[in-house]
Length: 210
Image (cartoon, rainbow, N blue to C red):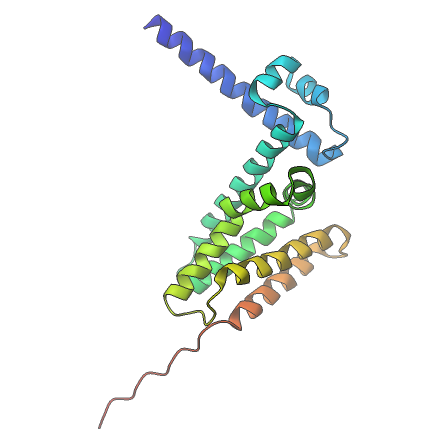
């Protein structure tokens, strides 16, 4: 019993250290950028040794990878939560896009998950993480609409990627925008209208016979 209790304490301490490292790295990466942030600075900010940091992460790139995954997981959770507040597939899709654009307003998310991730991690890994979280939700939503016959376009994977690229372009424009919130609102309108072009028209109900 004492051995199990001691192991549990060690595991809890290890997880707490890992969480603290991620929090410090996230703050420093977002403030200074990946290249300007050293491993030593992250260790000092967390008050642990370099050895303790390397116990959890192989190198700075692995630490950055974990930070991006955390950001994307949080973004996906926010998208899902917003979508659940409305009913109807198209309404949920619109609400999800709205939530993702809100995430793009966050400087840390925009800098790390959109700007630096493809450069630091490479396009393949960047896309892998994106598809596991926000882009994966977008693709799943469009696939659901296509299966139900509500989208008149077969390649929903391509459609998802092209529309996601539009959103990411908007995210890059936000820092220099005179009114980021207004730009974000216009971007949402563009996305909804663009998706509407692929929406299958609803057939009018057949009038009852006399």
